[in-house]
Amino acid sequence: MQIDNLSYGSDQSGLICGYVFAQDQVGRAVHTKEALEYLQQSAASEDASFLWLHFNLSNVSAEKWLHEHVDLPEEFYETLHEGSRSTRIEHADQCLIAVVNDVLHDFTFEASDIATLWLSVSSKLMISARRTPLQSVDRLRNAVNHGEAFRSSTELLAHLLRDQADVLIGIVRKAIKKVDDIEDHLLADRLNLKRANLGELRRLLVRLQRLLAPEPAALFRLLHSPPRWVAENDVQELRQSTEEFAVVLSDMASLQERIKLLQEEIAASVNEQNNRSLFVLTIVTVLALPINIIAGLLGMNVGGIPLAQHEHGFWIVAAIVATFTVIAGWLAFRKNTRD
Image (cartoon, rainbow, N blue to C red; front, side):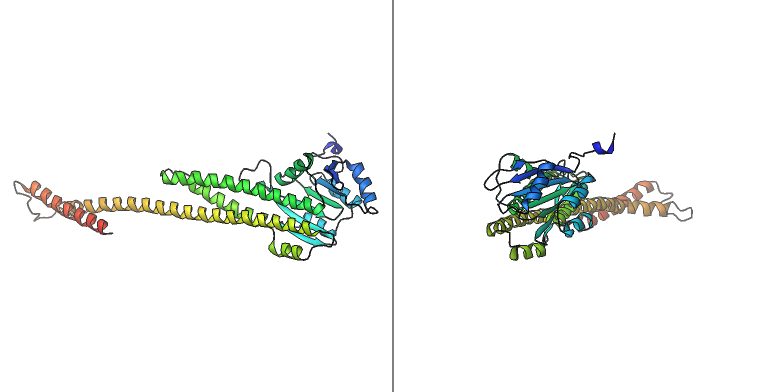
């Protein structure tokens, strides 16, 4: 197999899909050649149309094609290779640079199922790039394919953020169902290994909240000082998208607190079971103490052992042992009842 044939779900340039949005019209799918023609003509055009190109970075040709044919800010290429991948939207060189974390299609509540989508948005062009298939951007593609119209590239970005919030809502609902099942097992006293499941779920929610929540400082600067080409209604769309995120993140924080309380309840239940087992062991030890002491004393091979020659010596000693055992048991149970 030749390397040229390894398209990774994209064409030879790394393009997965492309759409041209004319004014008041639905998106029209374009290929690489048509996209190049649009890019060459858009510089001199003053209409309200814009282009969305979605690339697969697993195809090594994608980044090379972008360098050769698209004038993107250097900050966009820096974000592709930097270590920090927190979700954020920043203003750079008359463009919006966005780093959006999303979950894979086969998300299974694993931390490794979170990946990153990079975007560069201007008045005439929106470039998105990812390395693995993600849910939110594919929802946006489906919306475009089903005929949903977009007035501007910023509205397209706001729709993507809302799609990401919807995906996050779905994750929170699944997590709530998992927590409900664990709580039912707790009430039925059938915990098994559910404590470990709670810990894993809580760590995942913390990671999702850290990665998916937009950085407030960068978003605050953008919403209060947007680029001149961003319309006021688009700024309002972005503000509404961030408000939806805030609601979802609040629900996620509440779910984390609920998981924490469940963990504390489970820990208290386990401690109570351990205390019961320790109490039973203590009672057995206390009840066995008199007979052990008396048996140790009478078992010494020395002279003068009392009742050694008595006709009813065994029964007398047994009665003494039973009496002390009953007294020790009564004292132990009385102390436990008072506690």
